[in-house]
Length: 149
Picture 1 (tube, rainbow, N blue to C red):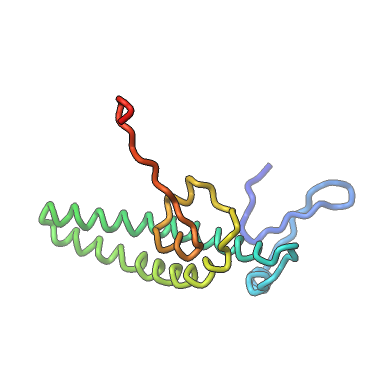
Picture 2: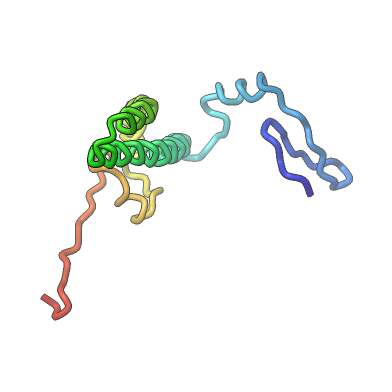
C-alpha cells in the first residue's frame, strides 16, 4: 500500500474498497475556516482540541527556539561571532512564532480551566503562566534522601 499524500481524502466505496479523492487547496482552506466543524455535548471540547494543537505547536517551536539559544550561547563561549550571528538569525522566526502562539494561548487557556485533558507528565512541561491561566496548581513533592530524610 502506498504512502498517503497531503491533500488526499480517503473514502470507502460501496464495495468496501478504499478510493482516494483529491482535495483541493480551496477545500482545505474552507474546512480550516470552519470554527465549529463538529458538535459536542460540551462546547468546551472544541477549545480542548484547539488548545492541544496550539500546545503541540508551542512545544515544537520552543524546541527550535532553545536549540538556537543554546547554539548562540556556545558560539559566544567559543568567541565565534559569525556563528553567534547565525544563531541570532536562526532564532528570530522561532521567537516571532512563539509570541504569536503565546498570544493565542492566553486567549484559549482560560476557556479550558476545569477540564482534565492533560496528563501530569504534560503539565509539568508547561510554564507556570500557562498553568495559572488554566487555574492548575502543581504541588512539588519534597525530595527524600536515601535514608528517608
